[in-house]
Length: 116
Image (tube, rainbow, N blue to C red):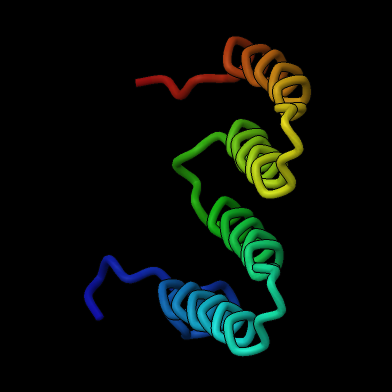
């Protein structure tokens, strides 16, 4: 492990290993879904929750991004995935995405920028 390896706060485990564990859990969920197939592919729902939690965890430890804008992006992607996974012919996620775009624009133009 080189000097660029980052660690999870409070432990000596590299963060990439934690994401690998989440990936293995997601693969296990897909395998359980396929082995217990009853005509419905339900695995994307828990995988979406795992991916959202992993993205929020990454956001908390990354200081190179604006956390408010990152949360708006993660929530927007999650809402879009929920809309697409439960598709009934209407893209209803456009309305909350529009509200988040307005909030993100306000944040973008009012945030403090680091002096060079």
